[in-house]
Image 1 (tube, rainbow, N blue to C red):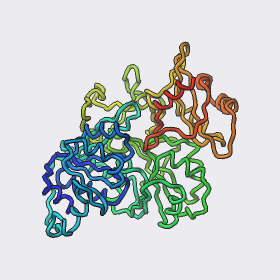
Image 2: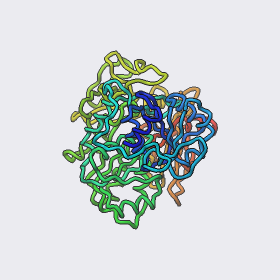
Image 3: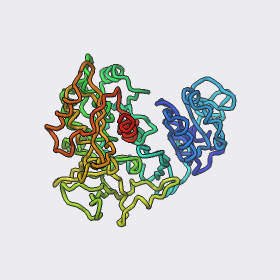
Image 4: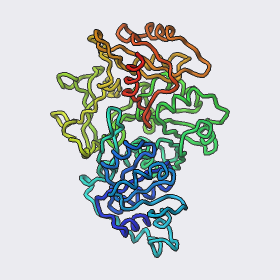
Length: 480
């Protein structure tokens, strides 16, 4: 509450934007809650943005007040100082810098504090808002197909997220390493904090430290993105991981073979809870019911959450489809974004008011949802539509493959040829011919790797684990 009062005294008015750019650290949450209670719109900024990305997103949100760590300030100082709409920079830590305030001067009683005494919780009144229309968070789309877009969410959509009790058992100890500037990390942590779960976080992922943390704190629930889960499943461990009972995975599709490997690694695992969502849907719009009735379906992202409708639409006729028919996933409900900044939300709605996700999926007879791929990422080989994720899933079954990304290579006659970028396991040395044959034996003719295979040291991904296929497509063309 000290942060909320201090921001008000600094001049923050309802609806003005407060930014935060920092590595994962505890102060983030007092800033987020304090800014919101003071009527501000909170916008988390990735410390990993490069110069042009950071300038782009800050020009979208135009934060009046900016909280940042010393690390973020040292990296991005030139950008921060060049933006005239940033009136105050507030630094975490003890080091004073000319022109900046210290977080401790706002949050605690000190000689430099703006406060004469700590604010009493029972006497504090939050700024009144219209929950259905007022913006509380400004997030940024992942930018996998271009520069990020500003995404606005209301207080109502966040309150609905808080009520997703299907995501947790309050008695569990949670370990979460998903960054808090990303919608998955931000919203999942808000859920766990609001339900008084014991929450453990790490500033960054280091395999040995991560495993040691599980053992030390007897962690029950892991919140992860698929790339980390894949790495975990293929890493031997000397630590006691028997406390782990559940894994929550979202932000990208989890492959069947990874699920099987994780079940073998954690001996007391009750299941892996998968969900599906995006920045524009506030959080997940489908989720497994692992924490309510204990059921999951391998390969599925679960069932639709309450207060939400999902339609699978034919990509050409836009007609609703039945079970097991692939089409575009379309969503309606209060979790859908309020609006974009600088873009027209209505352009993303169909004639029935459903938000068009651009993802291809289907549902089964029990209404479990399955995500196949992105519409824009489907490889068009002659008259066939080839999902890259299907080829990736097969390649990941090979014991010598650690990670993989598949894209389409432009071809004058065929349209596109599937080409794979492969990261090998340490010590493994399968040949290109071996891996091409491996795929050919398991997938139909249009899905064969006619564009070839390139061995690389890593697959470019977003922080949430999505493959940056645009980068791979550029690399494929350059390697021709």
